[in-house]
Amino acid sequence: MTNAPVDVSGLRDYGTADIRGGPAGEVVFWLPAGDHEFALPDGRAFAVHVGPDDPAKDEFRPTTGLRVNGIDLTAGGGHSWHWDGHRVEFNGPGPFVVSGRNAATGASLFVPGGNRTEIVASNLVCSAASGLPALEVGPGARVDVEVCGSCALQGGDGGASAVVGQGARLRLRKGRGGGALDVAAGEGAPSAFAPGESGRFGEVALGRGVEADRTPGPDAGPVVRFRAGR
Image (cartoon, rainbow, N blue to C red; front, side, top):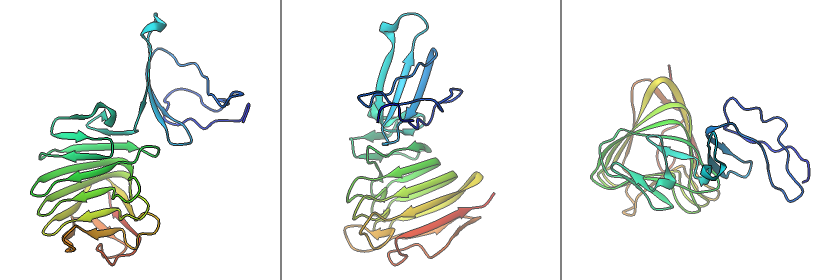
């Protein structure tokens, strides 16, 4: 809508209260020199580099909004992790610090069977594509997730939020300063947690200071909330 306010989030030290849409729905605003990241109300996220002198060197590119060790998923990967456009695969001990929020681009966090991996969820809101979980722990894998700040794992439509394969263990730990984690199934899925392809569910363990509002497992229901005290 022409001249309608647009809620732009993520910009630091920049006033966004008076940003409005143009006649074709475009959003135009001036940014100072430097690197900026922001998100639009529809969930699309962008990164912008504004040079101090030459506009020809300015850069503008879409991002997913999710980062691993400070690197946006659009980079394709980093040390011991890879992004294929749908799934982030971790193949190493880590720790992998996963942060940010995605909406327009579905993403799943995946640890293949047999791995021992540490993931730090830092103010993370990860939403999966339709039918996929936000987190999958392969058979026999051992995964520690350290919860820092306000976090959520949202399964895609028809999918659980977290899949824990046969013989696998997912352990939730309290991060520095504490935090909270909501694990929610996608629309139409009966439970936030589900077993892997074998049909046998692994184990969800809670570290010291972490509490759940119900026992995590395939019968837990569509939402399980974890609190990691300070």
